Image (cartoon, rainbow, N blue to C red; front, side):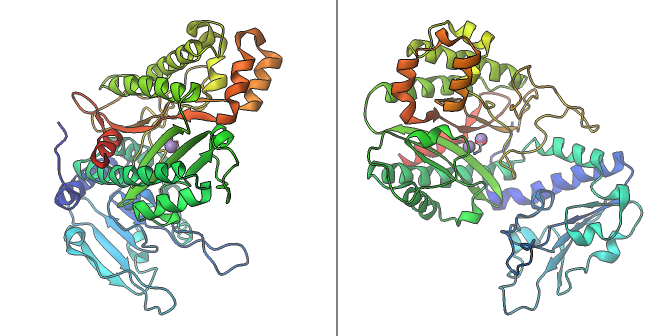
Length: 442
Ligand code: GLY
Ligand code: MN
Ligand code: MN
């Protein structure tokens, strides 16, 4: 069982678990310490403006310090982790606030004015260096800079979320659900993609750069562009549909949620309902011991069943999967691990060597091939799209008669359907963090 906790109450045990995990991983790889650097600001070429800061996720896994560039953490077996907390004397930019006791009590904290204050602690031959800051690379650490086996071990450990991490993701889901409701309302009012996005950010209280990924806010045919980012400033003349893939973060942990809406009842609304039905069935199948590859293949069969029932394809669901036709309508993976990274780590590897667990033939975009374990958090996001280039290719090179082109044409202005939830694997029934969060907003 995964204990239930709150973010602040679960934090001490989370840090204790990080300590245990790092001690085991360092020992297994022959290191006696690790220096984890938060990362530094990265500037545009020939410019004095920097890109939005994204902390090293291995640093964030220990500390809820999302905006704290140039801090660093020293981890040593049997000792309290030592945080070099970078607080420059600066009047151009606001330095980080003083540490708060709910997290700082778990560390030895040194407030530093010098961004390289950690450097002496990083010199030991058997100190692993983890991060991508230029100052770390400048130490010329050779094989002790981001050692692949150590990183693989840590990635595998991170696939099992602690109670604190689950509390963070539960809160991220709540924020996302509130904002998704606001976005749907804006859509119903006929707003543009740009305005819907503003309404979303306002409702979840996050800046653009604090979102886990660029919101996909797509009206009509834009829903068929899988990573659509444009956000048109004016609404189309006739609005048919709305696909929104938008998340939220809490202490750096992500929610990744998609909903699709029809402007009015009809064939497309029916398609959404059918996809929602199979999405829930797929979520319910999330159990310890399930091979996610099987679930992905099962999703193909179910989506092909929806296509067949809607008269969009003329062949059986089985034939559509066998011939690759289902992939014309569903050309991405069923989902991925979720955590500090939207496409979280460890989804494709078996061991410290990084041995890849192969994807099924013909499914190059699947990001999760593992057998599910308790504490995994993953997405379930079946989709069905009318993508002109893929359909054209099929008409030219595939079995053209397997598609009812007139029906496809009639729906293509709607873009597509995707429904995406975030699900926690437990020893028993799965917990659908997204549906629970939406239920709270009802
Ligand atoms: N929002 C990116 C994804 O769903 O994977
Ligand atoms: Mn998504
Ligand atoms: Mn996703």
